[in-house]
Length: 323
Ligand code: UDP
Ligand code: MG
Image 1 (cartoon, rainbow, N blue to C red):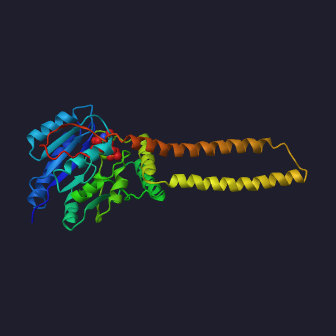
Image 2: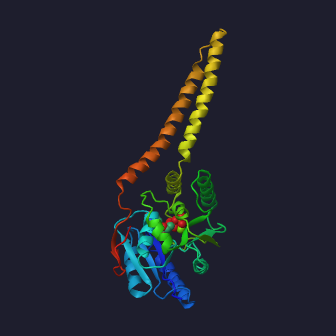
Image 3: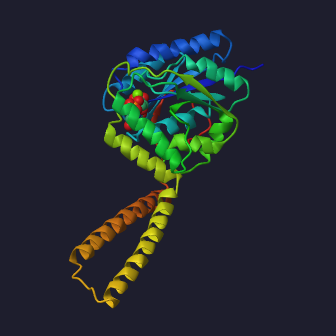
């Protein structure tokens, strides 16, 4: 049997403190998997430099000169975690039979890769790494992240609970993913839509080995909002339902107003008027905002700008197929 070529795809943004610590661990893992005859000796670690402002790219280039199993690509500028990951996966698709994506900060247990590869050999196209517990995250990060998954699913964007972007994908699944042309990328929600046989591997999440998280609360909230509006039209439906409900309440209110008028008890209803105006104004603005969000997405999609551009690469040229 021919052993599969594995590419471990790792997006890096300003990770000069982390790379020297974790890169060795990734290389060792590749060597161990090759030795165990689970993957081909052609397997590689592919770092994606997401337009870092520090020494990340020189470090990656040096690592790739020193280690045969290390390669790197450099994006033309910072495009964010999801786009960097896509750039890596779409590049790896031209060289590998199977890819595993993982963050470079060592938070995700690399030993789960063995089990992922076993699942791949059993015929799985997608294997999701799922955190069994998040003791090492702060209480705040844990609660916000968990409520995020719950909200996403409640709103109809199906994601795998407690799964970030640590996952194995076969070439077939990547070819499927390549056909999703959307610019508003939310890979966690897209990969389940690709389909094919999939399974789950659980692992414990550790603390970041060095450096700091790039996802403060503000970025997390916008990520959550993006995810929901990219994958679900439920918020628009909720607005429609709210509209119906308010119309119904208004009919009751009109009946009540007519009743009081007919039976001669008209009072100067200043407070009820003003509160109704405020309330309706608020509801309408909110609804416009949500609808505007979707229109903004359509605007970006119609422009169909490239999702990433690669400026440098240590890989040998293969078929030009970045999209
Ligand atoms: N990252 C990236 N581009 C960005 C922000 C982050 O490629 O604009 C990478 C980062 O280097 C890391 C991964 O995405 O490998 C996850 O980021 P981080 O660890 O900061 O997020 P957290 O684990 O705290 O959610
Ligand atoms: Mg992290």
